[in-house]
Length: 280
Image 1 (cartoon, rainbow, N blue to C red):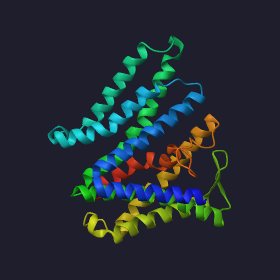
Image 2: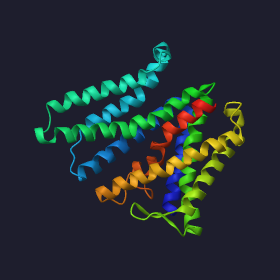
Image 3: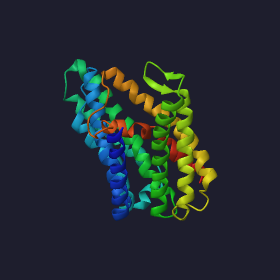
Image 4: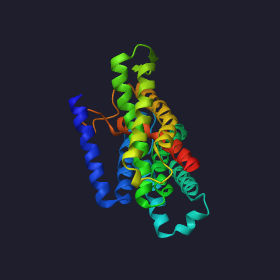
């Protein structure tokens, strides 16, 4: 627990310093790096299941999903005003995967390779790039970055709250086969803690958020975000169980792999983007 706490504090401190010094550029590169390591770990687990994804090729394409739209929007914003540009990038990436698989692998493995590679690209970097897209929802670059930070704070405090509440009063198992330590009491407590953290963040740093993003709105939007975060965490548990692994890796002392850190963000990123886009 001590090592986990120290790693968590170190990660937060390092991220905050980089964001203060380099702004959104640091944010997009941090997301791209953690997405790449997460995707690499996912491919490794898929290999343990018998699949043979294009690990390096897929990870490179995944980095492109996050970095290319961000910098293309800065260079030529008029292209993104028409809409659909991110979808076009994903379509081109899928075409690249299809072309690559025609010359690689044996005939018996090509379909599995294609499916595994595309799954890794879509499930990790494509989903996490919605955090980068949240940058554009603020009236200023700093406001957009704070909204993205709000999403991460809500999701990760939900994890911490679920662990603490579940350890204290957890009695009823939520998913014994996937995650034996998760309880309904811990899950409900975690969702409330995450939503409260999101609401308080909006209060304490009100000058950095959009004007209409107060405690109540931040708290209410965080509730479904945190709920989806629990599901996202269970999906990672499902993948690890199938791969017969306890942790996705050893990238972060006390926490495990990058996938163990980003798991609750993968599904919350598009949901948070959608809710913020609608209610802001």
